[in-house]
Amino acid sequence: MTTDVNRRTFLKGAAASAAIVAPSSVPSAALASSMENPQPSKKPTPATSLSTKGLTRMSGIMTGYVDSGEVPGLVTLVSRRGQVDVSVAGVKKLGESNPVERDTIFRIASMTKPITAAATMILVEECALRLDEPVERLLPELANRRVLKRPDAKLDDTVPAKRPITVRDLLTFRMGYGLMFTPPDAPILKAANELQIGTGAPMPASMPAPDEWIKRLGTLPLIHQPGEMWMYNTPADVLGVLVARASGQPFEAFLRERIFGPLGMKDTDFSVPQAKVNRFATSYWVNPQSGKLEVFDEADTGQWSHPPAFPSGAGGLVSTVDDYLAFSEMMLNTGKRGGERILSQRSIELMRTDQLTPEQKAISGLTPGYFDTHGWGFCMSITTRRTDIAGNVGAFGWNGGLGTSWYADPKDGLTMILMTQRAWTSANPPNVCLDFWTSAALAIED
Image 1 (tube, rainbow, N blue to C red):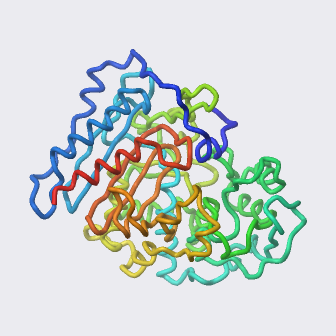
Image 2: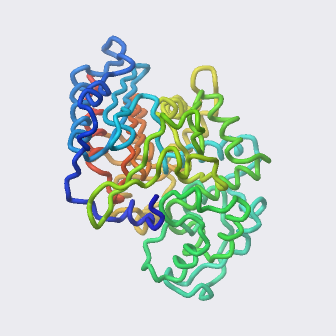
Image 3: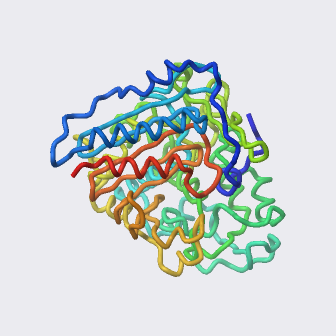
């Protein structure tokens, strides 16, 4: 287990240039058999068709990433108006012959965030929370905020916050605190690292329990004024604590009762029990010095092998493609899946609406120019301008830095889910994601 990896490795590190060769101990038969589609697509119809030729082409492109050793294994799911295609390739762990299967469990990292937003909106609909109320009613640790005069200022070089942090600020990532791309010696970054409040890659074992976590966060000043700038990640963790206090039950229990259970998401949780660990993929990251894959988290003894002290609303969940498809279908179908309604149409439409102003977009983003073509709804990205083959205006979703991606396109009625166990090396999507999005979109036969 690598303990000194921080989020810069996953979101800012340079992509490795060295080729990674798949181990010879993986039987070619296992790789070939793993590409079998466990659920044959329904017979195409003009109204809902996914092209067999297009899906076969997509599977071939994805298999190439496994054959080259770039990713150990992967699962793709493309769904359109009731037609579902799933393809698998590779192995759960390098050096072993245990193939990735449709029900393989992956660490979905930041794909947790939209689920956290949905949980929050359930409580907004029940009037246990209000979008524009200060969070200090339930999170007194975040009352009377101070704000740094500049991001690299000393921790006591502050001014009073102009207003309190609201629930909406958390959902839209405008609370004034989040992922920092500051010099490593910046006092605020040093203090946050020392407090172990989650400034790096998902590390469930290193996080304190929710009450202690929010207490530690409350000792730090904000970096920007509430509502001023989009800052990534931390607001979703705050939402997890807020949901627990507003509902009167642990965050993980609320998710199971109100989202996972009703949607049949039986494998989605903050840890993997021993009975399912044989389905859990080992997680890898690229060593920036050697360019080679190294184990980030083992399946049977790693950080997700037992319930964490802090169930992270920003990046703590594990899931499968079918579980996440259930969530995606609920989001596409304006809050309902089958006979279960999770949220109202009004809430879903709000979640899927760009919430950022042009002024906020001009000073925010993980990569230069990102908000030229995208917006931010409630804990997820919204496509605002079409510049590529995939992604109509209004498509929504998000990615997981440990190797996963989900997008849903209301115009095409399309869900695209990719799960791998190789962590991203940059905030820019890796080629395996880019090629999946393109080939999945081209599988539409209308």
